[in-house]
Amino acid sequence: MTSPTASSTVLPIARGAPGKRPIKVSKAVPPTLAWERSLWAEGHDVIVGMDEVGRGAWAGPLMVGAAVLPRDKRVYKVRDSKMLSEAEREGLFDKVAGWCVAWAVGAASQVECDTLGMAEAQRIAARRALADLGVTPDRVLVDGSWDFVGRGTTQRIIKGDAICLSISAASILAKVTRDRIMRAEAPHFPPYDFDCNKGYPCPRHKMALQAFGPTSIHRRSWVFMDHLPWTNQRYYRPEQPTLFDQPTVFDGALS
Image (cartoon, rainbow, N blue to C red; front, side, top):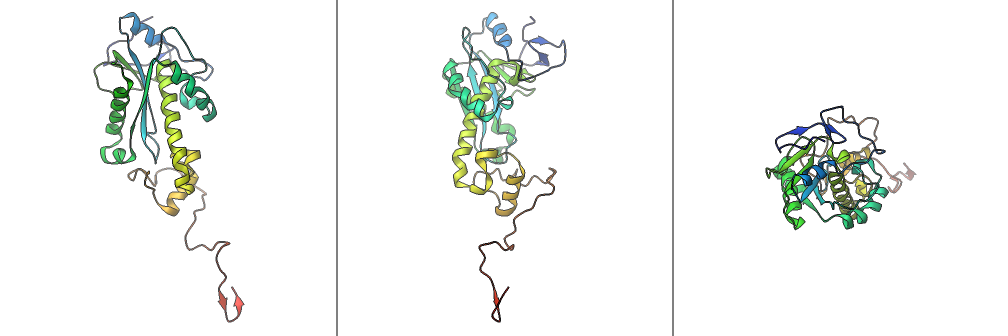
């Protein structure tokens, strides 16, 4: 197997073989330890997989998960968090957390997302995750073509959350942690259905924003996404009558 190369290279790989065939990902095909094993063989002991969640949300924090896996144990059914149902992710969370040699989730608040921009917010969340790990990484594996860690030890992997096991584990830890935060916020903001949509765009979220405006946990520069195709939705307007309105009396007649 060809070894992962220096941090400046973006490798479009499938199943650990660089550049041989198009990447195909499927829930039926588990991520592997191919990248981690190659780096361990080169003498790098602490390999950290990292992934972000919440970048495309309108509300709530952006979060980056970090996971260091053992060499001799495996938790089955780990996949990219996007391939799993909410119940599957919740069922795996404690198993994955207990399996990891070390793990952490770093966050950037909605205020930081607004004031600093999404790129810098993601860098901050990544730095916080690495600071909380309690170990010093020799190499960091990240999903995608952008090095949001910036330590000079980063290996970028296209579709890494689906094909690299430590990145998949990090994606589950970050996603479940963020989902729990959004479910906890939901009772404070009932119209927005944060327990269901977790702050991401959807028709009911859009309608709540049209009716009531942004909440304290919305990213103010991201709400009202006018370029999205919201069609055939009926919005609540304050002037519309409801069943709870008192009837108006005109000259003894009800209107």
